[in-house]
Length: 76
Image (cartoon, rainbow, N blue to C red; front, top):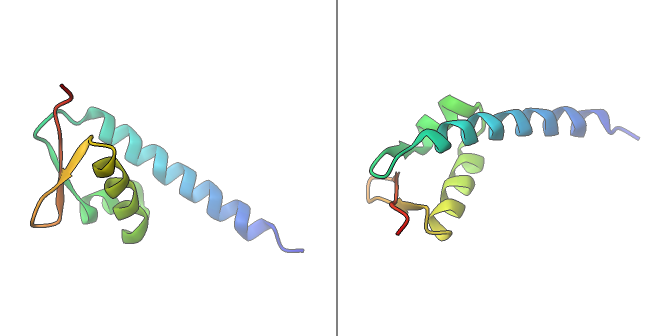
């Protein structure tokens, strides 16, 4: 049973998500982040970064712009 690669991948994913979360928490309304920038910050791949940012957009915290960047929304 090969569980080690899964564990290593999980640790990389967790570390990447932690880095991205730290960055996203510093954003103020009007700040923008693109998938390539999120990849640079976190070390995650494009699909993972897009999934995180799209989930935040669905939750109402971010808004997707036409040029594939996401902007931090104001919480009213």
